Image 1 (cartoon, helix red, strand yellow):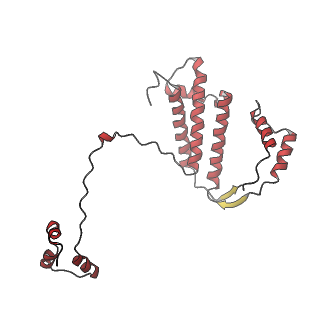
Image 2: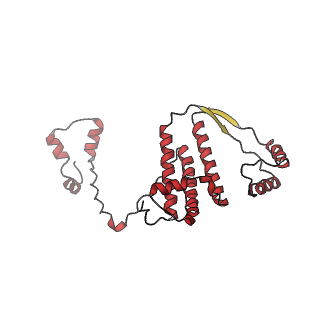
Image 3: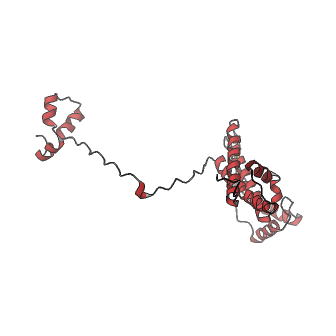
Length: 232
């Protein structure tokens, strides 16, 4: 990274959080014991949710201070009634059950950080922002700490989204370095393919061997053989 002690941008701080979080999560992943076979669950597609019920659920989710609270009794009863028409889930034993559960948890953490970013709930990070600034040796005016916290939320949310992909075995490779076309070396000319005359091809197929004198008479230099129309 650039020297953060002189100039710290929000993008650089978000990148630092993203890099540090992915490094820590990958280290934990490598230190785990191999997963054991567990139960993998897949829900079957069912009928679409009633539009009126979907609107009521969205309105409840958009209300302030509803994160982590229970649904109202009437809304919960209507939702339970609607879920009765959903086909039953499929369950089967799979060694990928634990990694899929971790991937879903990582997606949930990313969604929680996205919600905090929308609500400007900077307390969700606790003292991690101040600790990171101290580790980097950066001193910010108190008024800049909220901007640093928002940058950290961005970096952490993206890190958990990428961590979910890694739990599913998908690693996002960094983009390849751009190379100017005029700086590439000239391509090496390809060597001409060696073409055997028909007699040699027939002898090769029959696995016969020629004496050196017969081979020289039958297979002279390529240019001479081309001019003579082959060996006859």
